[in-house]
Image (cartoon, rainbow, N blue to C red; front, side):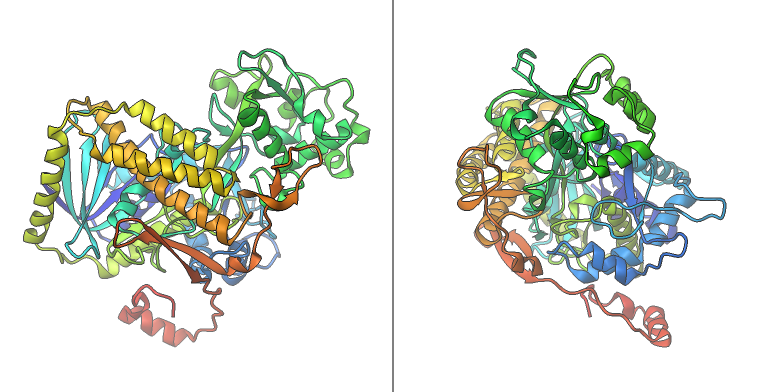
Amino acid sequence: MNKVNTLIIGSGAAGLAAAVRLHAQNVHDIAIFTEGLKMGTSINTGSDKQTYYKLGMYGTEGDSPCMMAKDLSAGGAVLGDLALVEASLSPLAFHHLVSLGVPFPHDVYGQYAGYKTDHDPKRRATSCGPYTSRDMCRALIDEVQRRGIHVEEHRLCHKLLTDKAGTRVIGAVFLDMETGKWKAVQAENVIFATGGPGGMYAASVYPKVHNGGIGIALEAGAKAYNLAESQFGLASIKFRWNVSGSYMQVLPRFVSTDQDGNDEREFLREYFATPAEMYDAIFLKGYQWPFSAGHVPGSSLIDIFTYIETVERGRRVWLDYRSDPADLEFNALNEETRTYLERSGAWESTPLKRLELMNAPAIELYRRYGIPLDKEMLEIAVCAQHNNGGLAGNLWWESINLKHLFPIGEVNGSHGVTRPGGSALNAGQVGAFRAAEFIAAKYQDDTVSVEEYAAVMAEEHAKRFVQLEKTAQLNWKEERLALQQRMSKAGAFVRSASEVEAALNEVYKQYDALSADGLGGLTPKELTETLRNLHLCYAQIYYLECILMQIDYIGSRGGSMVLADDGKPIHPLLAEKWKIQEEKKEMRDCVMVCGRGENGLPVIAWEKCRPVPECDGWFETIWKEFRTGDVYGTGEAK
């Protein structure tokens, strides 16, 4: 048994920042428990130009926290007060990273220039290049080590411990992934930074070393927001990477083959009247990389055509950068495409040459991972990329119903239907700042007795003893594949009520089987993956229930489209089933709330979106509330 004031679970950019901020505010009785400092999404992912979204701070263009908050919540299903916090703290969180050595670019005057990203009316976005989040993690890891913060790696979180009433967390149980031994930690506070549900999908651009742990918190009773809202897009699958931005704008050939790599054909041609129309759509896909129901018809037809080719026709899809087709005429392209290529100086004879001029590191990236784009094609699919939903937190990122639990990073559901590109990196840092400040101000005292903790642990130990005494029968690899394929079929960007209902019937049966199976006789590796299956399967129940509710109440929006018999046809050459159910836009004023009911099953409700607060505070009053600590209040909006 171990005891700390604050336990941080996860070591992505958000979890690391929380540890650093706690230590900086003299909360030193802390520990990070993680599967590995080099694992997870933050340190293993990126994009064409990975974006960090912050308040504008360049030139004469005006900006303010309220303006940014309104843009963060413009897509709907966002709590405006949380958006205002993310906007208000973005300069502080950003400059904290700069102070740690993250190389965000500035001009000779020290101004941090920006550019427009998706869903961004201003130039708030910045970037260090394709590995922005990795640079953030490396700088934060250096600071964690400099401060001497305790870190334990190879620790899989198996369970969050709660008090008898189920109203607060009091610690967690971990598995040592190398030895198979168990370790319990008593904690006054738990900062939960386990990332998105990457292991739940077969077609995924999440790094293979990242699985996510939201199921652990859902099982403990934590409520969630907007679990049905996710983001999907075209990505390479041999090496998982978004093929956004310049990967599309240089106009590669879209090629499909049979499963053996034969029978090559440019399948997109069957859907477009001319090559120029097809390539204009491919170019636009670079700007509008994520699938969006609002771009159907539009650039998101590219995602649908790729889905049909890979999922329905069972073929493989590739991007070929080695040559242009003979009938590609640059003069026939629309003005936006031609102007972009012309201003980029990219009037070259092949997509690869154009990519070399526009973004040479993008070529080196794939070469480093054994994919030379000058010699072979790049296999792609439409993949899960980000969950805009997640656990429900208040103004200080504390769980709205499970006290002393602070979900931060992607596992926190502060985003709504859409979000500006890069806002997730800012949200993770802001969440870290908020959780650390609140803990330092309000939660440093011990409030859980040794006796209460020991009683909870005794009950937990008895349950696990029964499981370990019973020999495991199920094969974890087969079970993982089944749950991943189910989610990519029913819970990805193409959805229908019948598919989701069938998937729910399967996932309940699978979870019952996994729960009834033993844990005995397994190697540490097998035990680790078996426990992961339990977490992922439990989470899948919640996600699919929320998706079914979204289909019934909302229709198509954001990163998903719903197929319906009475829907609107989306393309004249597609089969009869390809009709999109239109969105009930009035539901954008609500947040979907999901939590465990008394019978153990998910219960879903709707919460009216709180607007962005209109602030006109008086300095003396604000100063007094800050001095007295009244600013921390209950964590709810005033």
